[in-house]
Length: 300
Image (cartoon, rainbow, N blue to C red; front, side):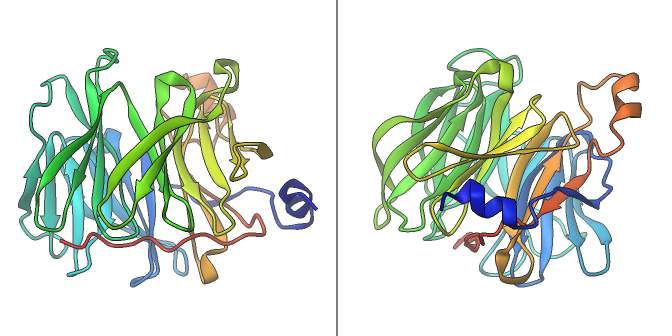
């Protein structure tokens, strides 16, 4: 039985989980220690933590262009803002500089970030002007060493790893592709890069992604109002239509990591569209019948 048939029997209907009204909600990460969903609203410059059990939400930090928040193994969080990666120990405390990305254009900023299964931090940048080939993808090791791993990107977006840890998935959104790269878990080096899945521009732009425990890759389609699952061979396996035009990224969380949480954006929607789309900017959820992979905190 294919996964899409399995989804039909599962509770695969998306629902409103949290009405966040995010201008540009992004980067959802499930923090297994606190059992909260971390995310950012880039448009409002906020890093947020939301507790599904109580629906309580609070800001961890505020600042211009906060584009990612990740848990840290030593406690606290890593924030991405502008060209800087910052460490935050407690809510309201001053941040400490972890690293500044070298050689980045003033027209670029950090975008999606994720940790590999060994706890190394991967940080992508994007061109604010969408200038082709001017951004990059970096790896930040626990000892703060920064290395540029991929150059020539435009909008570095979704990042994820296969369950066995030997493949990395990466989205440079304007290419309309999800790429797969051979990955060495011991060294964090990249090998062959190849096209994993291609998305027609009429179906939306590939944005953030997450990987489930069976190797399925879930990709949000910004402007396309849907999230897709591709199996480990890159074959389209399921499409879930969403009540928002601009889904941005997804992560598994909740009990046994069986809930798929999806962030969304109000950005680029007209007043008429917003009236017709009350869930724009909200966190959505569904139970697709498969569980996810636990997020590894940054090891630094």
